[in-house]
Image (cartoon, rainbow, N blue to C red):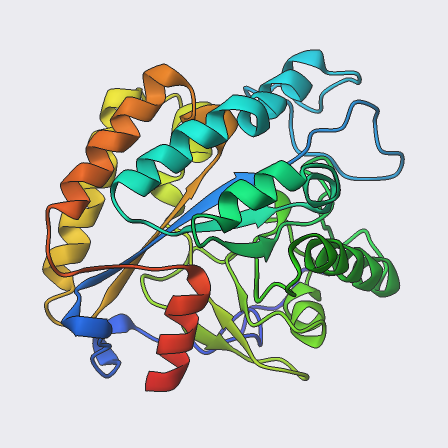
Length: 301
């Protein structure tokens, strides 16, 4: 029997809220745009994880076979080379990184943690590996344990429990927000449906959504859609320009999700540099971590 569509939302996690009816949102120093750059540091497994759902193979060719040497090495490039190129660019413009780090990277790459911490990074949960997504095929207890192990691995490696979460490939089940909040997560980046943070309704704890601007995510544009890097750079600038204009009325966010194995390539990184240079020439921009933004937003609510 087909599902019956009724007036209202399809889920109970948040209320529908047109941005034009909300009170004006102000950022520190009356900034028009809050800029948050998320760096995805993730591990692609050598052997197929039995019983797990994996994202499609690169180029949308269906599920990959293992060992997938190209994907394994490509992701490893991000953790060996690309991350340092991207961190240098963020340093140039005074942008503190928000690092979405999976449990496997957290356990095995203390050097990366040190390098990110030296730049004032915030670490947020990113699952166990990019080849292990959360889906509704998991039982509630399996998902709860997955989240708990991911959070605890990051806490042990960094010395601080993460406040935020970005699921591998934005993967969630219908239970995920509630389970994240119960584990102490305060904000989630998996819902790209707004240009401002918003509260989510959960039974335990407090949870906010910090929406990623997925239309200018490097993976979505260049890998999935084949957008040229020159066009991509202009897309970021044009997106920011639109947000900056609208931000004169009520504050906006630009949450830019990047993958160092992709954007950290030398022929791509120079165009990220150009885009961030354009943004940094504007005075009314607040460069912040995800936690900074949610702390401020919660204080305004």
